[in-house]
Image 1 (cartoon, rainbow, N blue to C red):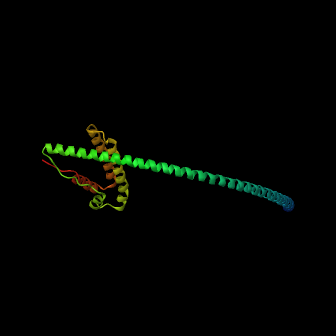
Image 2 (tube, rainbow, N blue to C red):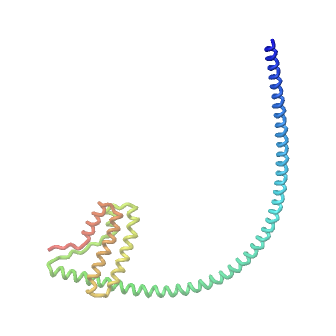
Length: 246
C-alpha cells in the first residue's frame, strides 16, 4: 500500500511538473510573440519613415532636376542662337570661298584643257612612232623569214567576240575578263610607247617584256577559264599567230 501511495505521489508530481513546464512554454511562446509583434511594429515604423524620407528626397531631386533642366534649356537656347549666328557667318564665308573656288576651277579647267590637248598631240605622235616601230619590226621579220625560205601568213586578230563565241563564256566570266582585257590593251600600248623610237637595239628587250607581259595575263585568264576553255583559248592564240611553212 505504501508503494502504491509512493507511485501515486510520484505520478502526481510528474503531472504537476508537466503542467508547470507547459505553462512555462506557453508563457515563453507568448513572450516571443509579443517580442516579434514589437519588432514587426518597429520595422514597419522604420519602413514608413524610410519611405517618407525617400519620397521627400525624390521630391527634392525632382525640383532640383526641373531647375537644372530650365537652366540647361536656357543655356541651349543661348548656344543655339550663337551657333546660328556662327553658321550664317560661315555660310557667307563659304559662299565667298565657293566663288573664289569656282574662279580657280575655271582657270584650272582651262589650263588642264590646254595641257590635255598638248598631251593628246604628244600621245598621237608617240602612237604613230610605236605603230611605225611595229611595222618596221614586222617588215624585218618578214624579210628575215623570206630569206630563210619561210612564208609568213597574215595574222588574224583575236577579238573578244571570238573568245565569247568559241569559249562559250558565262556572264560571270565576261564580267571578269572585260576589264582585264581592257587593261591589257592599255598596258601593251604603254609598253610599245616605252620602246618607240629606240631602234633595233631595243627589240630584244621589247620582245622579252612582251613575253613576260603575255604570260602574266595568260595566268590571269587561266584562273578565270575552265581547263577546257583555257585549252581552246591556247588553240585560238595559235590560230591567230602567223603560220610558218618551209
